[in-house]
Length: 278
Image (cartoon, rainbow, N blue to C red; front, side):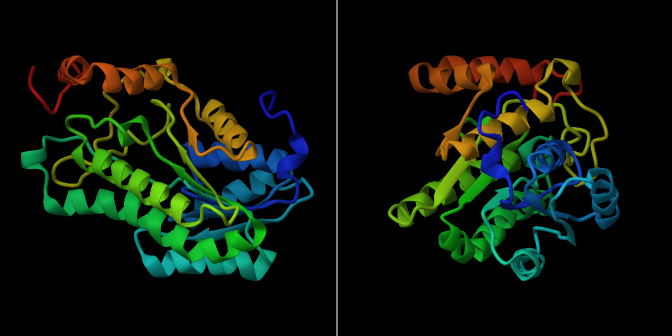
């Protein structure tokens, strides 16, 4: 963890991570475990969480596993309730659970579009609303793992982009509501990260894509992203964007949006089995 200067910052902190069974969520759990944080791990697959708990056990901290489908409000409420009941307080909530899709908009079923929004946006909203009263008591951090797609849409990923844009609006509004309450509200925007999210992307009918259109070897690793997120939490930042490609996209979108959209269109159109035409 060479990027984390103050290793003691997370020691003894009570941290909730959704989508903790794989990808960025898993990397965050592993890093925070090394830093002696107490963990409440949420995911739909409780068996994977229990396996992860066994892998992580051995440090002087508490690890709690909770089955949680974030698209269901009752599951989100239960996740927060279990954290408070077993740990007494919450210092950090990291809303990481998410899914994506890849299909032409006009061919995509409404059910598929809703499923992405339910998981990404409503899951973040449900968990955040339930956790805020406890985070206010600890002057804690409310974190959303978003995406570069949260400020620049992508063709063929309409529902995913819409959900991330919605999260940005939600978190910016929450930040201003609690401006003088010492609640840190952080939006993190990793670039393309080598996780299973593209393999698990939904197609137009809502089935798993089971392939990635991109070269996963050239992408940022979940471990690197986790370090960046933890730095941003430690420094109580409002926004995190460390990926070079993402930074370029952000500035091009400001200064040359039409040029950027043509470049993005061409890139997506050249993907294997692209959902759009050149």
